[in-house]
Image (cartoon, rainbow, N blue to C red; front, side, top):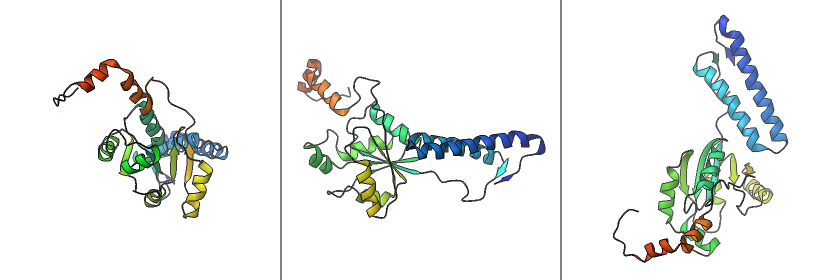
Length: 224
């Protein structure tokens, strides 16, 4: 990295670079504690400061010297979108570019014993348009759930607090396939609203008499 700032701005630019270095050191510290979410946020702040200086023409950074944004993978059913989904994706976006894997209908049937409410193509279309999602793809058919990870080759996999995966086993299984992936589980369970899970939404619909009457009405293709 080379300073290009005029003399009268060099002191300010150097101070900003010092702040970026502090964020970088903080990132290493939090990573050593296993607090990867905070670590990646510190990295993002560091990159943001340096990016601003670069775009203003105040520093010169050689190609490849700036760390590329990490590829962050999130996977799930995403059946009836609720605030918990938005929270998970927004947290993943703090760490890098988010790629969402939407579970196939057959996978949901096999693992949950029921079909999803919305078919896979509809769920995929909705997820593609959520803020913070760079790319969304359907998962693979069959029981090999790690095959899609081999295809995407993410830097980080984010697990929600309720997703039934053992982080250590998942990381070990990936390493056996030659994949070095950071596995991060969100500790916070988003409960800011009453209906923050697909199950809660379905139960609410099933217990509401007014909604049951709506279901019994003929479908006149009226948007409600």
